[in-house]
Image (cartoon, rainbow over all chains, first blue to last red; front, side):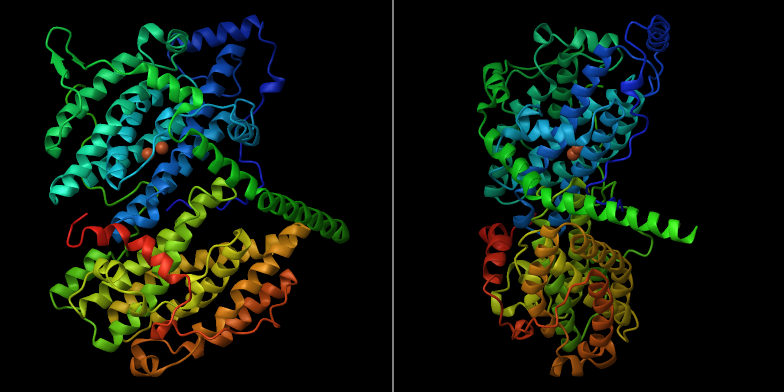
Length: 342
Length: 285
Ligand SMILES: [Fe+2]
Ligand SMILES: [Fe+2]
């Protein structure tokens, strides 16, 4: 099992955070090299010159992704102590813990671009950074553990599998590890719903209610419609993003439409259909006003999620300071011993 | 790609939890009991119940830290320890329950407070990180020699569960030892908190090493609690000496957990843990 026993307070290892030393962004040779990498659909590595806008865009995307993993722990951690069987408790604990691991991989990937985890965390707790809006909805029943795994982790997979080929090497490699675990999460969520759907009438109703509530928010995880997504074009030109928001959303709907039959449940959208002409899945209109409200901080749990992250971070400050102080003292002690021995 | 992305199959594993080859899953234990190849007598079952309850309640406490830890690495580390303890609990409870035709979930979710056998240490609130580390340091310093000795049990199933558990508790002991040293030797504040955490938790050391008629009756199948005390004192003594911490003045509390007399906290722990299962008795999850 993964055992990360890196002492708190020490910076996570970074590959080559040479951003500050990188040549100026008007470096023509660097730009030519970068363009060649993108044209070949090859990988940009931390040591390579890259346009400032590319770096900024990646930092924004990767840090938002990392924050989403971390904030995303909360709605599910909400049920760890109440999980209705010990097996489910164990699977849920492992899942939420996996998400912490995903956050760690992603923060490390972002650090290779010259930012630090501390800075990213500070921005998050200050409410200055974004994370996926889906985590601002409450988990009110056990069935939400199933719906989140099946739909939210499922949407994450649809989004993230193409990111394994993202042009920035450390990001793509982090996504490979993340995607492996997300597919476990999705199966586990599906299994929770399957069990409920075949349980008592109350359990089945609980499952249907959760699917109804998480359906639209999970579709909105792919971001605004293509005609309202200003950053997508540039992101696709840089080989970071591979498919448009609507393309991915349509694939996701197709996956849900097939799998919901196995569950014996329904999706709360009567307009879902496979268009034989376009070979694409279609669905009914989504409430983008609600999406914008939640994004603007007016969702049901925005304040609660941020406050929990802030208090965990601030309550833990003395621990991180202690670990750093201890680490420094140990180094000083070693240095003194070496000096005495010399 | 329409019409099905992820395939749906076995979901009992997680990518971050690689099940080792010698793994003994609760499902295997239940199967062995059903087939009659391993079913404990009443005394051994009672003994396994104690071990299972300690681990279960500790896992329940530790699980609360996930998403609240001081550093992401500790969300992962405390999560690992909680998962290990929960795994041990499931094995011990499954084995114990097989004597009475009960499942791990019957025992975890449908027993009342006086029927639990956990020691008071494991029921203590998390407090701050230092209090949790103090509790964990005591727990691991007790469980490590316990499981090492239990791996030699005359009861093959207890021996097998303990042989797997001791490898994991070895890590728990290392984790908590490192943190005791770090907090004691870090800043003034962390030292004060570590000291306060030990003051809160140390009174519950005594109960762990008390012998009673059951520990005598199980004989070679179990481990005599008092026989572990010397090693516990030596191990914790060395760490505390290095950390410059003194616990000698802390009085021992009266226990009673093994007889079903618990701390004020257990009722709340059970209320939370059991609420959903009891809302739907007989349901499958
Ligand atoms: Fe994740
Ligand atoms: Fe996930």
